[in-house]
Image 1 (tube, rainbow, N blue to C red):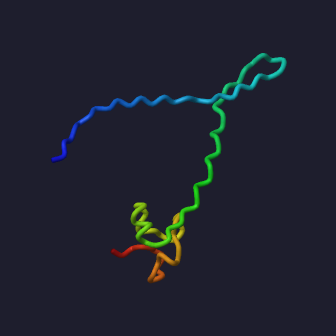
Image 2: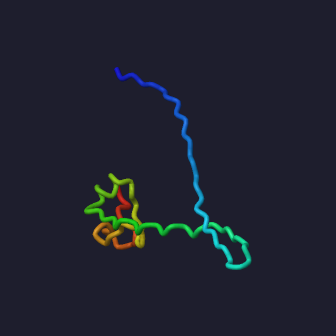
Image 3: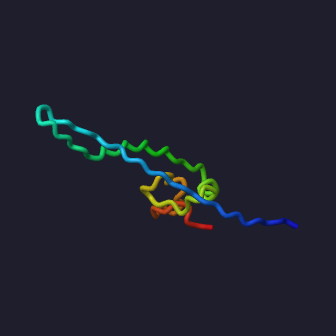
Length: 85
């Protein structure tokens, strides 16, 4: 027999803001504005060897244009891969 246990977890999230400060020469005024967001890294290329691998990754069905779609996954050529079973 397997025993189960309920655990209560408290999560704390801390957010930070980056601010650019521009000082105009001579006027002494300061202009504070949020810095532009950092660029996001390019998503890793996804490739599924077959539909079993795509299903195991929770990525099915895969529509044409989505990461991981490939003609080899779309046996009827309708733009939807791994749509069966």
